[in-house]
Image (cartoon, rainbow, N blue to C red; front, side):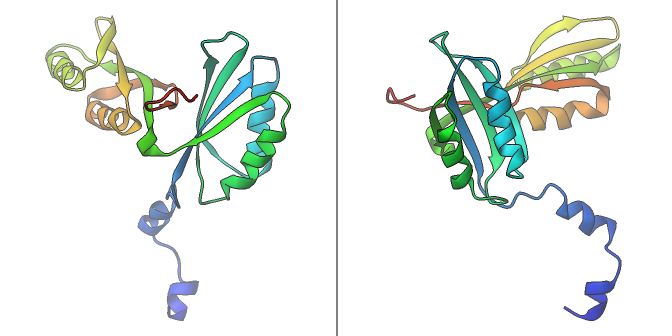
Length: 185
């Protein structure tokens, strides 16, 4: 590198390219915990104290009402994931932790989109919804609310397709995952 590259101003393009860059494998952690008050706060706090940015976080009951499953995704190359999982194991309400490999897990996300869809544009929006196997959950005179379920990539692709029509509002659940095959949880 020459001195100008080091001390010169950064262009907008290079700044944007460096923001949100993934540095490694995304870890999908499923954490089986006791269904008790404060457990989610302790788990999330552990990640925050170690400088992790949680990309998605979803929590819900399991087949046993005494337990909940926390599914979270983090970029594992920014900070080593091993240390935080060892710390998680030490939390009293944590039963089991799995770091799912992308090939060994079924991952899904739910998103709802409120889209401007009046007049002639409505037919186009409905075609896109059909292509993505979405479901219309509310139909107003000026807007449509659509539910899309699938991988994060599918959700993002749908968002890009409908954004030109006018995206009024969007809500995403975050990713949930479950291991493929076998009976291990």
